[in-house]
Image 1 (cartoon, helix red, strand yellow):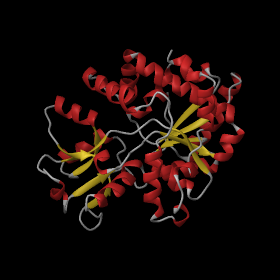
Image 2 (cartoon, one colour; image 1 turned 120 degrees about the vertical axis):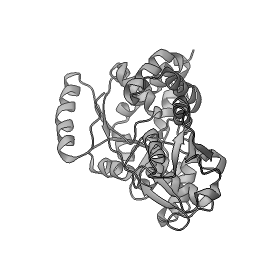
Image 3 (cartoon, rainbow, N blue to C red; image 1 turned 180 degrees about the horizontal axis):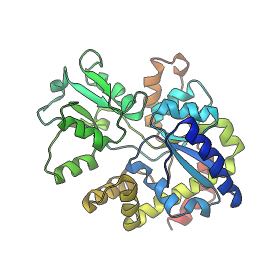
Image 4 (cartoon, one colour; image 1 turned 180 degrees about the vertical axis):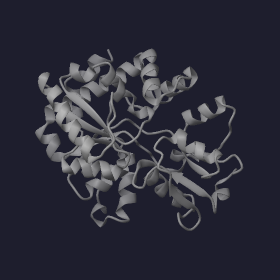
Length: 333
């Protein structure tokens, strides 16, 4: 699967070439913006590699747009049809336009990771905490998390965008002395331990009531209405990707290794366990708790969000239709 970084020239190429291929197969095309390269994308990659999208009669063209705000700008401009990013990004965009989350990949098992010399949250005061990009998932999560810990960005700690989307690569900046802490996953920690490196784990985000998602799928409500069959086909292929990843570790680890450029089998097995057998749900319904957290966060700067509830930003009617038709029962029989 070829990832295309978002810029006007490349997107024009994608828009002109991919539909022609889809037209040859008489398949509808969905351009899907992907915010980051992480194991939460596993089912999507499996569906692409194993041709499950074609099986369910839809063409999917992934586009790598690192920033959530840029992704939703592309969505509203019609350059992409679906955005896969955090619930926070979806709610922030949904406060300005009719956008709905229609599926999810479950929570990300994020941890607050710091230099081994920092043994407590109090030790973060005056330190530098690194995010990925302004407006991206890790940036929004840290801005939500740090005040809960009594650490105000710009006052108690320095919060900087590193320009690095992958958490394992951001953690490397800790050892280079460029930042003191960042968000990472259990797999990142396992990878470090295999290399003889140690970090301080200051806690899981869920310990502080922050539910983090990185693979929620959202689209405009008009698109969901006008292209219901294409979205339904996408969801069936994605759900089958989950099933295949859960039931076939060899396929899951091989494809994760390919896209994440990881060769160590122990790390890949850890990812399979933590994601496919852990956080990724068999039925990809979005997490209302994550959307509720996002609403609370966004309401501080977007008055229109105040008084809203998760149902105002979620539309799972297509997913329910798939379930009612017995798709999951047949898949997991």
